[in-house]
Length: 58
Image 1 (tube, rainbow, N blue to C red):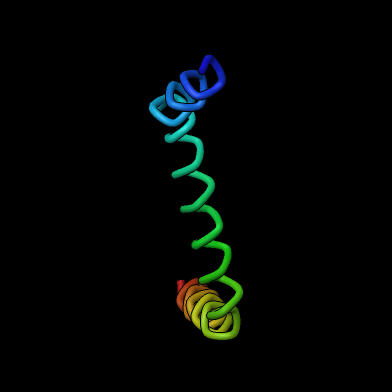
Image 2 (image 1 turned 180 degrees about the vertical axis):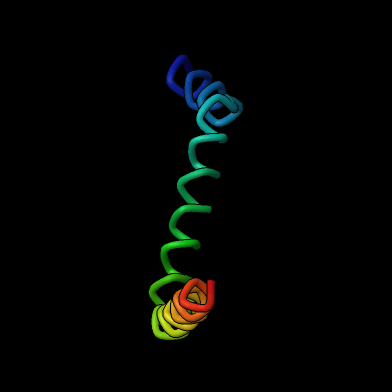
């Protein structure tokens, strides 16, 4: 019976929930970056080329 009580206490414990949530968010963000890597690269390159063109005008 002691093991069952310990298991119930472990399930009710909420200290680790914040860590699990942060890890899940990071996993989702990494997955999105991997899925949209090409589009993100195109956007970033476009932004940097616009910045370069604008600084040449100055």
